[in-house]
Structures are given as C-alpha cells and as structure tokens.
Image 1 (cartoon, rainbow over the protein chains, first blue to last red):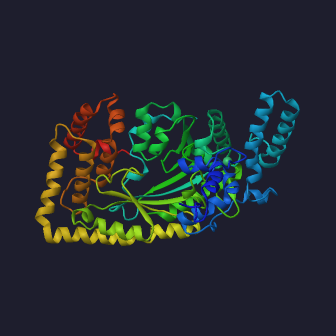
Image 2 (image 1 turned 135 degrees about the vertical axis):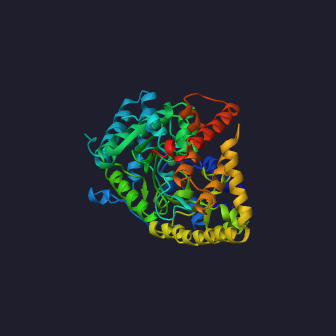
Image 3 (image 1 turned 45 degrees about the horizontal axis):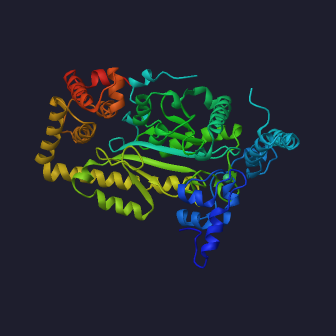
Length: 125
Length: 360
Ligand SMILES: [Zn+2]
C-alpha cells in the first residue's frame, strides 16, 4: 500500500523502512507496523512516502480548512516544524549529559531556551 | 480543580436529554477536533515523562483560556476502572482513553457539552455534543473553544497538510462530525443495510452506539465523515448534515408504514418489550437496550402512554454496567448486575416512571 510503488527493489524498500526521523527516531517500518506516527516532524521527514498514502485515504493532499492565526500575530511562521525541533534538541542534550559532554549539553540547552522564548513566550501566569 | 463523579451519576448528560430539533430520531450531534502540541512526540511514542509534561502543559495553558474557567478536570489515570467505564458510558471519554496507560485526563463542562481529552490518541481531542440535531450550534461552540485554546497552545501545523495528527487518517482539519440516530423502524422493516450501503458510497462511516468496532445496540447508529483533508470543516459538516434529513424521512416513513400496515404486530412487539422490562428478574445490558429501543419507538408512536422519552433515555444510560454500580454504590459481577438491573427497572416503573428518574 501507499508508497510501496511498482519498480522499487527489495533493497530500496528495506532502505526506506530503515529511514528514521531525526526528531523522534521512528522508522518508516515502525510506522507501517503500528499505523501511528512518532511526532509532527514525520510529516516533513517522510513527506514523499506519506503523500501517496494520504492521497489514498483522503483523495486529496492539500488542507483547505481552518488555519491557526496565532503564529502570524506573533510574527512566527505558520508551520510549526521549527518548534518541533525541540524534540531533537532535548534528546541531544540528554545524550550529551550521559556522555558528560557538558559543552554540547550547554549549547543544546541554550538553543532550547531560545526556541522556547520565541515560540512559547513567558509561561502563563 | 477536580470533579465529583457522584454529582454526574444523578443526571443523564447532554446526549440523552431528549430535547432539541428532531429528537424523536436524532439523539445527539457531536463534533470532535484532533490537535497536537508541536514540541512533543505523539502520544504512542511519548515517554512517561513526556506524557506527564504534555498533560501539565495543556492543563496549565487551557486554565488560562476563558473556557478553562468553566471546566472541571478529571485525572483519568488515577480513576478506578468502574469510574473510567462510567465516563465512557456517558460518552465523555472514548473507550481507548479509558483503557490507555499513563498520564491522561479529561476536562468537562458542567452541562456535559464540552469535553477535552488529554493524551488520547492525540495530545488533545476537543469534543462538543448537543442533544438532538444541532450541528451548526455544535460547530459554533467548538470553534470558539478551539480558537481560545489555539491562542495559548502551539498546535502542530503543516502549511500544506494542515493540523498534524498521530494517524494520517485524521490529518488536515482533524474533524470528526457525528450524528447519533435512533432507527428502529428501518431495522424492523429490514431496510437498514440498504441505507448503510448507500452511506458508504458517499464515504460516510456508520458505527454502533459506543463508537469504533462496537456492534450497533438497540438500533442506535452513529453516522460520521471518513475523510478529514481536502475539504473545509463546513463542507464536512454539510456532508454529514445533508444526509440526516433524508434518514429522518426514511425512518418516519417506515414508522408510519409499521403503524398503518402492521398496527397489531408492532403494538404487540412494543407492549411485550415493555412487559419484560417491568417484570424481568434478571436482564443483560444488551437486552435492556434492545427493549428500551422498542419501547422508545412505542412511546413516539403513541402506542404506550404514561412514559416520557426523557425517562427512557435516562434508563438507557443508567442500566449500563458502570452507571448501575455507581447508582447502587457497590461493585457487582455480571450475574449480580443482571439481577440488580432487573430490580432497578421494576422499581423504576412501579414508582411511576418519570418521577424519580428525570431530575436532570
Ligand atoms: Zn518523528
């Protein structure tokens, strides 16, 4: 079904199945087995693979309904993939701490704070 | 703030109020929106810590929105099984939400029209339900709730794919529009399968009373849209809304046919159903629902007097396993529940029906 089109060799399919999201780490194989995606970035990372699947389910691939208005009001992009980057940064910081690589951990922490300030604003009172 | 489930036990909830347009056939109108927070993994891939953080983030943020002030929060992860089942019977949470693991909750408004499920399949499922046929009213209400939450929560959004969901079947608008109908005459006249086949052809889904996978019980059916991407929310509301008057018309004609052509048969059937409900010594939830469905039709056809529709509706939910146990204040196994259910029904009808039950 879906992206597994004609003309793909077994090797190509195997490679596609092993392709993993850089944020949540889910592989396309895991998604195919569970039917659930791992994080919002999967729609970017697996865009080519998901597109035929989405077309098959909905008979369309372009959203025409409501859109969030908050981003525009705050001068942020409408798509939220930049904010989803927090998932990868948190993982990277955790790994850095585990290896006692405090320099990289600090860099990650600063990048996390910058993203949070930009996207999440001050925590609600 | 947490809520006392006992206070809910004595009402019947929005979907069984039995009021609103076309409420002789349309039980309830419901819209559900699937939303996710952009900076966390989807629920099925979230760690325990992620789930706890998502729950806290959504609770804290929603509390700052105007709608947050009208909501009571229930920590579903800490509830006893019977209480989770109670919320399912009430249609305030899904069966999946009741049976899931980890940090999760539901926020409910006092009228039981709005419920926000946190950490179901998606981080947030906003649900709004009205009694009778009122999709326009439901849409206005849920749109306002969604707008308020969107001001304080960064929803995962893709410029081309729309609102991003854990399962690609919900991506785009994330909307599921459902209308629950009571169609006993179409079942009795064996037209129901034909009707459903024609609904499938226009890509509408048909389910039984308690959602996905459940058998239709007591002639109650839920009609909903199957696709969520490529059409606007209004177009999808119309897709479901347009077919409802047609179904109402079919059901009304089938009821008229039954009265006109088989008056004695149908009168006999509903009277026997009423008789069993008033005298049985042990009765299952399924049989109760089936018989209540027939009595409900009998009341609407004027074949049974002295019973109110709101009263039948309240029995539909109060004879469900968890409601029955909450009302009796004890946990019961299936066998004891069947005995207790029969006793509850006898007492209810002996007491003159409506008097004790319709205090919604
Ligand atoms: Zn991912």
